[in-house]
Image 1 (cartoon, one colour):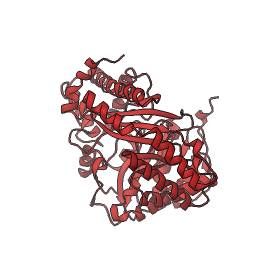
Image 2 (cartoon, helix red, strand yellow):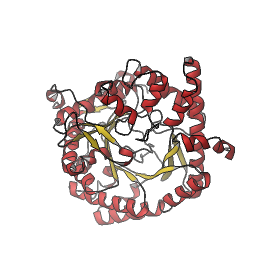
Image 3 (tube, helix red, strand yellow):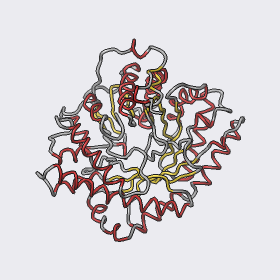
Image 4 (tube, helix red, strand yellow):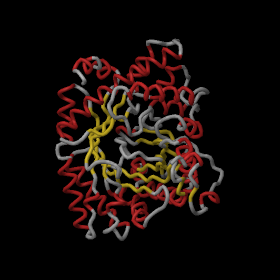
Length: 454
């Protein structure tokens, strides 16, 4: 049981240290909405989402008011649409029609984002998968609240390099179709390896086929709280450092557990998981990079960064897992560039490069996230970056992702403003050497030997 005393203990964290519940995400299965007629399919989708989630925003606001806990986002994740639209969608434009239906439902409900305009193609692509993927640029250009993800690999299946090559092209096309808005469409598109079925964070959230008909997943966040706690133990041993992070993560997660239980009860939807991830925002003091600085690094990217991040990630999980009955999603520390002012400062100082970020993704929660690159970057180069990240996830049996934004008309030295939680970012240089002969091979990279465990 969780007492109100535990919530009161976090008042200072909320008022002074940027603690919030980043999202309440309702996952909804749309498998029973499949239909051979696209209009009937869209009607079923709209009716089911607006029925199940009709009180999501109100109840989220009520909980925030009653417990004085900021709940920043209320979101919805759905069954990957490639699986739902297979019977009725014969062209990419048919899938775009479903995207408009989803966007309309999200707007009527007042949620911040809806994720699940997705395909899972880690071993191969069906015709439906390919049509969905080819529809992504237009769908993201013509909607406001839809997030899209494509899972191209896993430890069990290897990496679908045909999908990797295609996603490089799709990202470029998405950037071009939204170039009047700083290629913002790419900020709502992520390419994953080992995508979890229960991730509450966007843009990678979808409602996996292993999930119940509906579920409540909660993502908590508290980089500022961890940083504040570490300020009081400067110069202490690693033992004290680790213990402080664990204790802080425990308290943060207990807040999320309370919110999840209340939301589940009031919405009459089962509680799924708490995602422990430290998810930064552009707000000063709400930065994973600032935690690394407090640990002892001049900037994120300095020698020792990967070790410090590995320790932080592990201690967050050790502390948080004891505070919740079910932990899942991604859980650890996010390292987006545009959403973390400390990361932006490190890039501007020359301490942080894409190559160093790639090394850091070996030990953190996700991958290369919200990175702006020159708009003239080749599709094959983007595919090469996706392949590298996917390989890290596949070999290390963890989730990795790429959310990269080739900003049309921008080059190294420029900055780009995305707004809100998406923040702003400097345009980062990418390796200019060619990888197209590698990317243009067909087929897939086999699963690693350690995947054969059954």
